[in-house]
Length: 269
Ligand SMILES: [Zn+2]
Image (tube, rainbow, N blue to C red; front, side, top):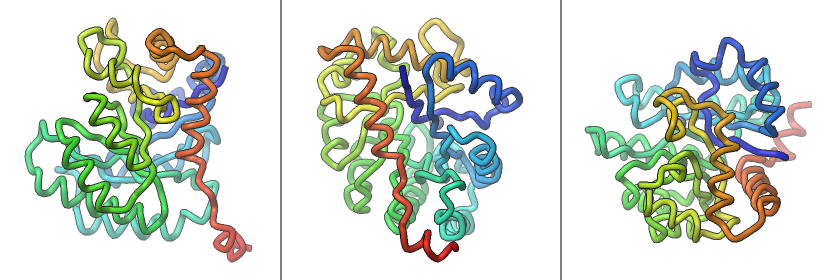
């Protein structure tokens, strides 16, 4: 079995201390690859160290909309661009996306959120990178801003919403991140959407430690939960488990397998 957790915060204290042991435990459950997204500029340093230490972990760098108070917008955006210019050519940097970025309309400062999101979409477009998008109660604006940016690859992470909303994102070339939301019976609309979307549009994620399974405390999630999310997904779909497993792994690789520009590579020698 081979699984890809496309969104987990392995740099958080819950995991950081014993990460090597955790990764080997999760490997036994078939979880082979991870993408760890950033929340703020400070985390970019630790994420790069994490990627250097653990080959199975790729990283995304960006400014999360839920941590606005930590961002120095112009400065941080320039630093993000400079970091990508200096590190992206090196495959071992582990950088595969810009993230986690987006809009969360449970929170204030919508205009500032939009400006930050748009600027980071433009950084991603410039560097030809996919994006990892946080979209909460903001699907219409997220769709509009992605469409305008020209970014044509990424994941709408921890998607919750209708089939029509998901299908719009898929029409832009995006994948839909399937997480623990589908394990909650009350998430009727989201479960219907995930059951109906083409298999080619789906990737798995835990968003651990933040999101948890129905029987767990919030904040106690782990990549090990991926197996349960997968089982729930299989019960909702017509395809065989083997087919779903293969497709989801391939979809994840398709988004995050960065093609290193051969010219850039040549100039490194
Ligand atoms: Zn996250």
